Structure formats: C-alpha cells, structure tokens
Amino acid sequence: MSTSIIVVGANGRMGRTISQLVDAEPAFNLAGMVDSKEHVGKLAGSPCPVGDSLAAVLPQAPGAVTIDFTAPAVSLQSARTVAESGRALVIGTTGFTDAEKDELRELAKRAPIFWSSNMSIGINVLYKILPELTRALGDTYDIEMVELHHNHKKDSPSGTALTLGECLAEARGWKLNDVRCSSRDGIIGERPKAQIGIQAIRGGDVVGVHTVYFMGPGERIEVTHQAHSRENFAQGALRAAAWLAGQKPGKLYGMQDTF
Ligand code: NAD
Image 1: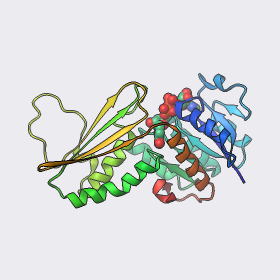
Image 2: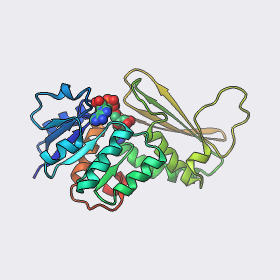
Image 3: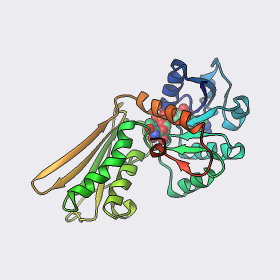
Image 4: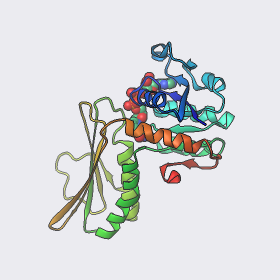
C-alpha cells in the first residue's frame, strides 16, 4: 500500500524536490500541495488538491501524511492544524525558538509529529558518534564548527549545526546556549576552554556543508559532512513519513526513533 503525502511549502526548494520524488516512487502518492497565498498560483494544474492552507487541503486527502519544509511560524501552524485531527506531520523546517519547540512538543501529545533539523542518514549517524569521539579525546581538545549554505538560507547558524553543537556540548557536560560563540571580532582575548564556536558562511548554491574541528596539542581532527543534493533530505523525509504513518501521538519524534 502506498503512503499518501501532502506537501506544505510545495513551491519551495525542498517542497519541489519532495514532490518530484513522490511522483517517481511507487511507494508514495501526492495527495495535496500547499503554499502561501502569493505562491499557490504556481501550483495550478497539479494532479491533486492544492490550497493556501493545510486546514483546507487536509480533509480532501484522508489518511495522508503531511510533510512541511517552510518557516517556523508556518510549520507551527501546520502542527496546530494536525493536532485538531490527530493526523501525522513530518517537519523539516529549521530556526525554531526554544518556546516554539516547546509548543511542538505539547502538540505532539495530540498527533504524531516528527521533526528533524537534518533528514540525511550521514548527519544522523554523526549525532550519535561525535559525542563518543568528544568523550574519547577528552577535554584538552577545543571544538569548533563551520557550516556553509546557499545565499537564500534564512536562519543562522543552521539547525543542523545547532543540533550537532547540542550533542557535542552535552558530551562535555555543558549546555550549548551557555558555551556557543558565533561571532569573533576585535580584541576578544584568549579562547575560553568552555566554548564551542559555530561560524556560518553563506553563498552561491551550496546545499549544506558542516565541518566539526577537534583541535588538540599537536594534532587536529576534522569531520566533514557534505550534502551533494536536496534529494538526500527529501528521501529522509519520505522515509520518516512512511514510518510516522504507523505511530501514535505522545512525543515529538526524531530520526533516532526510526533507526
Ligand atoms: P524555500 O524558501 O525554498 O521554501 C519555503 C516554501 O515555503 C516557499 O515555497 C514558500 O512560499 C513556502 N511558504 C511560505 N509561507 C507559507 C505559508 N504560509 N503556507 C505554505 N507555504 C508557505 O526554503 P527551502 O530551502 O525549501 O527550506 C525550507 C526549510 O527547510 C528551511 O527552514 C530550511 O532550513 C529547512 N531545511 C531542512 C532540511 C532538513 O533536512 N531538515 C533540509 C533542507 C532545508
């Protein structure tokens, strides 16, 4: 049986990639497309219900799982909408504030909701193994990170860099918010020991590169993940959607729950 998918942000970079993949994969079918009032016209002629709000499209696609890659306020609204009906929702959007994430966790008690700042297998494996590397190296090694993204990206640092940073900080017994440094300018003095630097570079059409540096006495380890295309993220979102279709509400699910 195929999984029906509604795409919110269907005219965006990720939304278009997901829709194309759904078209190409027999295990999925496109059951609805949503974009903003300004952009929904570009979806005219699609072979499925189209609208400028998830609330309007959801009843036209019974049983479909919604995938939302848009902006924090939009995805939060999608979560409020599915919470009314208990329908499943996969969110790939980044840039949520702590308060917005708390609201997502509350809404996930009423509908199966999944969120991951990065849907690729490679990054999710790094979320698991970088804390181990951090502990094995010990606290003489300074940890820094650089992330590169295309010039349309709105949030900084990337959601992936923040999640990686949280894993690394936790492995040291720190909270990322207490030790993150994302700007160095002027006479800033020596680098404090309890610090994780996360710097962002923006330009061109870079899909996403994250490098974590472990810098110790006389040596340095660099771990780099490069996303070659958005298809990787779209595949991950579809895998998450197929998995989420069989889950009950209760907690805000993430990629680790699917492994
Ligand atoms: P984009 O700007 O290309 O697309 C966003 C889309 O959302 C646009 O089509 C826009 O019109 C639409 N939108 C805006 N307001 C809307 C509304 N009210 N209702 C419906 N649609 C609305 O952005 P993108 O590059 O596709 O990225 C989207 C989000 O996904 C970003 O937060 C990005 O960081 C994140 N992202 C996550 C992953 C991951 O693996 N989790 C991967 C890539 C991107």
